[in-house]
Amino acid sequence: MLGALIIVFREVLEAGLIIGIVMATTRGVVGRGRWVNVGIIGGVLGAGIVAMFANVISEAFQGAGQELFNASVLGAAVVMLMWHNAWMARHGREIADEMRRVGAAVSEGAKPLTALAIVVGLAVLREGSEVVLFLYGIMASGTSVSSTLAGGVLGIAAGAVFTALTYYGLLAIPNRYVFSVTSWLIALLAAGMAAQAVHFLNNAGFLVMLDRTVWDTSWLLSEGSIPGRLFHALIGYTERPTEMQLLVYIATLFAMLLLMRLARYSPPSRFPAAAE
Amino acid sequence: MRSLFISSVVAAIALAPVNLRAQDFTITIKNHRFTPAEIKVPANKRVQLTVVNDDPTPEEFESREMKVEKVIPGKSKGVVRIGPLQPGRYPFFGEFNEATAKGVVIAE
Image (cartoon, rainbow over all chains, first blue to last red; front, side):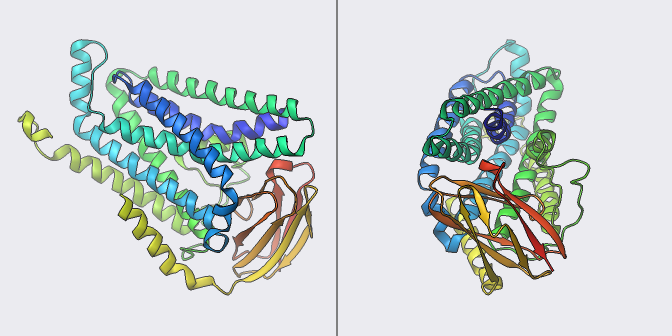
């Protein structure tokens, strides 16, 4: 049971972290709960479908289907996170001002919420499909089913607790810093995802240049450990990054910061109509 | 956005032929064990492991040393591309059955 708990918890950790960050980012926005739920439910359904077609996906593209699928999912999430951060750079101040003025929830355009719902959905989809396959394997093999299933359910519950911890941890940040903190978190999250997408493309046999390992810090922080997984999910920590992964990581961070700067600078926002 | 996906997939496929001729090795999973559990591959080359899962249950072929993590569905097979590896021992395991599913790739 403990084994199943740990395996499932390890898989849901990353999705849990992302959901926690998204919830904190959208604090005070009307209807965000609904969007996050749509993301989670969509992700779970998607995970089931992906698990069902695991065979087909796995054997597509000369056996590289799974890697390409993961890389595309990660790539899509990176685009969504960039969009979100750019949008927040433009409108974040207005939202903050309005929150201060009315003291409570503000209604915002649905735009960033759609993007974040997709990010949540993709995170749940990617991690969830492995959980579904793992639990299916246990049910199919028929040995100690109930205790392992209990372990799996507890693992998911532990992931939910972890999401809550992330969320309330981020809520403790004072109001005026919260936008910059979450923007940075999302930028690092996106950079880590982009680097991981590169890794999947490399495993798929595509994008094989610059594949020399830059460093090996597995002795310091193993990616297999829970703290290692956490840092992997949060800032994209990789114990043996390749040159290409490092390059893409830095490039994504730069692109994100540039995009946020551009979004912030254009129009000087004195004209409400020009903001749209 | 969709066109972005399509163009990235097309770009990826365009880059593909780089390693079409990678040497192939087969590992079979049966009763949550790998056969052979020890496999020798040439060092400093990209090689390809075909992992055949004869069990009805899925398995996750994983090795942090080789930087691979791949689900192999039951009664199915998956291709794992690794390397170029420095000479040495690279352990791998099946994450869903870690107690029995263990093996090592030796690059020389």
